Amino acid sequence: MDAIRIVGGAQLNGTIPISGAKNAALPLMIASLLTDEELILENLPRLRDVQQLQQILSNHGVSYMIEGKRPGMDSMDGQIVRLQAREIIDTRAPYDLVSKMRASFWVIGPLLARMKECRVSLPGGCAIGTRPVDFFIDGLKALGAEIDIERGYAVASAPEGLKGAEYEFSKVSVGATHTLMMAATLAKGTTVLKNSAREPEVTDLANCLIAMGANISGAGTDTITIEGVEKLHGARHSVLPDRIETGTYAMAVAMTGGDVLLKGARADLLQAALDVLEQTGTGIEVTNEGIRVSRNGSALKAVDVTTDPFPGFPTDLQAQFMALMTRAEGTSTITETIFENRFMHVQELARLGASISLDGQKAHVEGGSELKGAQVMATDLRASVSLVIAGLVAEGETKVNRVYHLDRGFERLEDKLTACGATIERISA
Ligand code: UD1
Image (cartoon, rainbow, N blue to C red; front, top):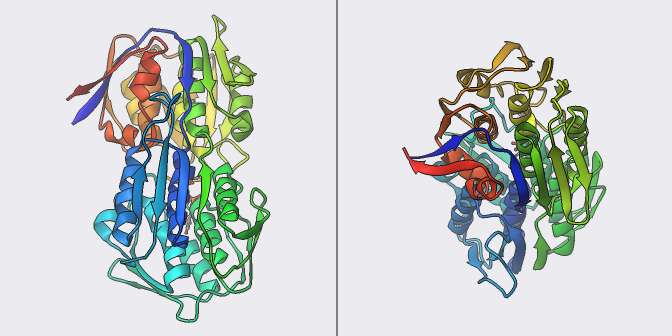
């Protein structure tokens, strides 16, 4: 199995191109199930999760064609992919596919809306908490579906088709918002989704669905209204830049020092995280080309953060920020409010010399630790990259095992960091 080997100590200087957002790409690909016409997605990142979802979709009958390179495109540009679900040939999503990626459960919305029945395995996914699917089930039931859980599968049907309704999420859920919004596009009548997720990826999906002929208003606010339509058609849509990749590299530069342009990044997608970075003493400058991040010589200040749904500080940057705070002056408290078990990186950061104590959903990070390279391993995607960030300043060699987690969500991480002066390579462990 591959590992990432890092020798710490180098500053980062140069340009890092930001890829299309994984968390937008996945629901956008799933939206292809809603129409028999072609959905063309531009700026799709090259990631294991995207490949995995492609497999799941092809099992339902979605054809998937990657367009060739065009003049002027370089190897870091996103892919252009044509997806077409001319006919849904299988409404089952089996365990061996769905268990590899939680987001694949979201096919339940479009399959039910278009085919009036489906059988979708309950998901597996990241080891960061129990992550139930009750909002999906309750929300689809509110739209008139009958759903039973049988032997690990959600068996859903709506013989008369889905019907518009009002549904209020008891807690903000990105995936359940995506799923119910997709399902409601083809329901009869009006659906109002209250306490919806306001994440930029929800707005990106809504924009794509609107381009496909859906009637949606309010995406990006907590109340989304969808007037059902008879049919959706093909469209062309470009995936928005990845705000988590942006924030991750911004934290890497804050950690090592240096000056890097995050090309194509959009500050409005992660303002809360950029504000926190500025408070640490990191320079943030928004330019026409993206976001420039710099830290030259100044010490890092400790800052407390609490994760929250958008527009708050994202839980997907919590682990990376914790790595950064191990080197700050003073103690910072990091509070996780979205997932109950998202501190798996703490003991691995400790192996590198970090001093962090846990108190329920709070982590107290004592700054100023001298990190020293070691072998580490992580159990989820964002945790793995926090170890890479720590490795960039740790003295000597750090080996991050189980690198497949990184490949799920970071396109060519080692190439992007090497280009800015880091000593990082992929090795066969
Ligand atoms: C998405 C993101 C993930 C991010 C998370 C929160 C993708 C592919 N993944 O995950 O990177 O960390 O949003 O920003 O976009 N919950 C329930 N019942 C449900 C659904 C969710 O209790 O039916 C709970 C979860 O356990 C969690 C909270 O709601 O505590 C938020 O989860 P949710 O927003 O649904 O996360 P995902 O959509 O899975």
